[in-house]
Length: 295
Ligand SMILES: NC(=O)c1ccc[n+]([C@@H]2O[C@H](COP(=O)([O-])OP(=O)(O)OC[C@H]3O[C@@H](n4cnc5c(N)ncnc54)[C@H](OP(=O)(O)O)[C@@H]3O)[C@@H](O)[C@H]2O)c1
Image (cartoon, rainbow, N blue to C red):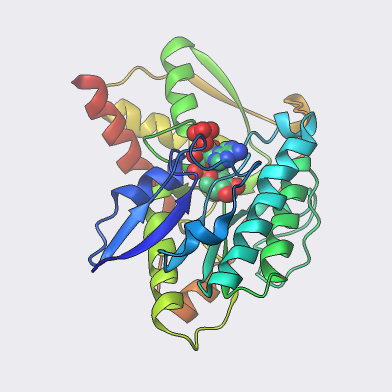
């Protein structure tokens, strides 16, 4: 009989990518927010009875809006995972919790290692850091997988926003002083599955934090330029100019890290996973979207 993994945030970018994976011997059960609301979780003991792992990918991800809704963000990003982890401990199953580069400070220097001190500069980052803390102190066997700049052909993300704006405008202005690395939701989903499998199958696998992005680095401006180079190759309309601007020229309610590059060498060391370059991952997404567009 197939083992069952519970995935929260099943309608999100990462949740959808997890649902699409073909995992022999595993059934992914991914309830929607309406079916399992992280801000109002039901009694989880009964629910967890039939599961061998939980992947906690659901989150309040509206980074700027979280500044004006910190209580809701905290309920979803901190209290929700705390309850999931406590129930996972009682059920004796591991929890794989997805977290973010935005736990790191606005002005520090990456690439960040897993043991670097967190100091979030935004409400979103603070609530995600609290969620991490709750999972770590729950007593459940756990893996916290921090990722960054998640992109895919589904849902809302920077690649899709650029393609939409690029089709409408001749000139775009994009922030060029925030460094990081994009992550293909599908690549991340495969890593989450590998980590979950290990925790389920190897009782000696220690709990911990791992960083996971595609390899390399760029800025939002560099990412936009690559998106448009790929889009042009597919015959899509692109802007004639992408201007590089500073964060100060594009004020947002939430402060973001100027350097949120994550050092992913621990993932490679412990799980033998090497991530492909972000350029290849983004090219694949643009290709998929161009194909959809042509249909
Ligand atoms: N997106 C990024 O750039 C990024 C970067 C670093 C880390 N992460 C982390 O990666 C994980 C997955 O993110 P993503 O990119 O897949 O985000 P996403 O596309 O915004 O999806 C978020 C998911 O969480 C669900 N959700 C929101 N509020 C909920 C609630 N109250 N109860 C249950 N589910 C709720 C959403 O449901 P609805 O569809 O109903 O809204 C959606 O399924 C999150 O933990 C996020 O913090 C994301």
